[in-house]
Length: 91
Image 1 (tube, one colour):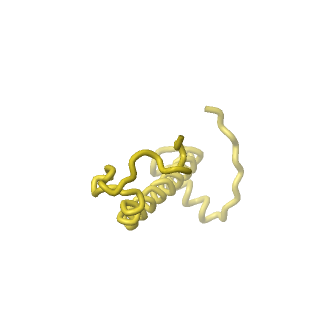
Image 2: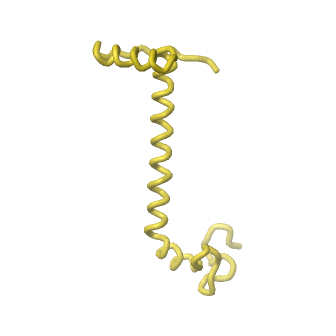
Image 3: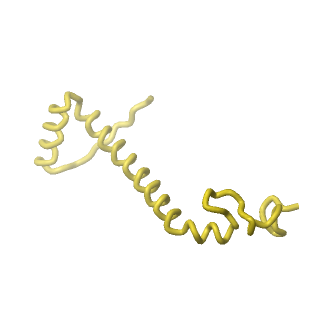
């Protein structure tokens, strides 16, 4: 994978902390910064997934009522047969 050079400016205390942490981990400063960014990006994705899961749990009953699903997510007796007119995939 090709590498891109980034130049960042931080205060001396931050730079020293980064040097020390990289040294403690036994990696280069470049690798240390790269790992921090990758970790941060992964946490954001995980936060989104957790929020979406919480949303679905909170509104599970509303979705079930709207789409006629039973507790397992399978079509229940109230589910319309086929596609209602005007819905995607309707013929």
